[in-house]
Image (cartoon, rainbow, N blue to C red; front, side, top):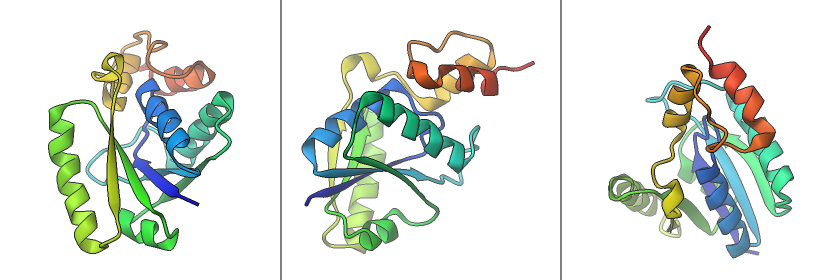
Length: 162
């Protein structure tokens, strides 16, 4: 069984993330969407909240081979613990590639069997980021084109400034 891990902060999950989750779930027997902690990014949602949002989105999409988990620490430690085969990363632009390429090389150095595959976003998702969604929602903007409907209300309620 081929096990892939798709790590990210998912703060919050967007249609861009969902695109990568859906496509990767078709390539592997099992896909773990791993909510990770990025200490350099402040989070709007707790790890548990992000997991819950992802679980709802995955369930709504009917993706039965996708598991949601979380990890605080090195991705490669989780990769080894789960005996995974592949790390999946989504790319929106060339700037994403530069960073993700460095991370892939570091992971490969830490674990020789850590393969990383890159899935490029559809053109309509290349501009989409969680940071952008948070900023639009904070100022009361409509983010319904950016996040799945099943979680839209919670995202807008949480992020909208009083």
